Image (cartoon, rainbow, N blue to C red; front, side):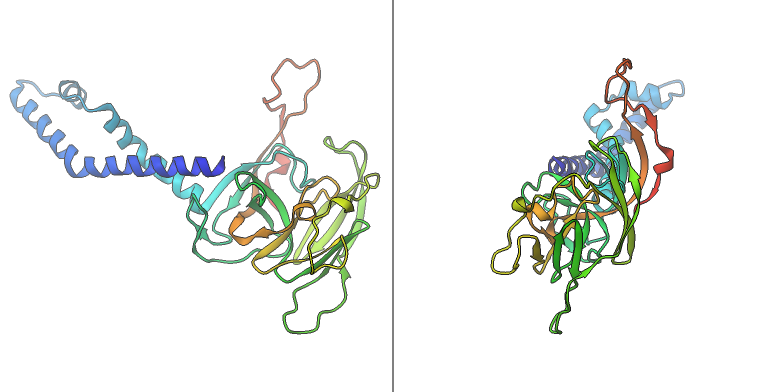
Length: 306
């Protein structure tokens, strides 16, 4: 769907742009001459509205000429600078909630052409702890958002609801797995969770963020992605070159790299940098408004994403 919209936007920009250029070079001069001839034949001063009625312009050309600057600005902003996204699920709670609207910085991981996402100008690579939007590897038509946990060459273990990591070490001898710093904050009830969950603070790279652990939900180790001839255990992975390991902050309610594997670098869309608005859709049974109408604006959630 995202690629379809990008293709439509490219076509609209090209078509309206071509019409705008031809109008500047040819049709505008012809129109100006016709207006001058009509004015010369008239005994009174004619305004632009009267001249337009006497020499009507093709409505397609007129609309395309007016729309092109707007479409061009939207195309540049959405394709190369920032793109808005809506959070549809609770897999990134408490960092991102259902109803959050975020901005994704498109140039963070390279400037890419908008349709096939081929990198035109390399800029930077994801850092451990980034919240990133990417094309779901099993269906690139779908955009996913998760946190970058593993970089190329990292060894990762997720066992007993704890994350262990050995960063990529190149030719040097790698050390033992180290548990990431995780401290308990408290318990909290969330609308999209069936029972009370525990909130922890975790340090991932240079980023300190919060995550959720559901103590009543068992780990689905049997459903984990199995990496052949590399990992020793079902809950262990080694990130291949050019790929990344992603996990949701809502650790027991997120379908992520633990279940479907790694994200190729070409699938990266951009880095989530800010929440620009947040709507609550929680309704009472007596409320007659449709479910898609917001019940509240959560102004306190507007700001940068950690």
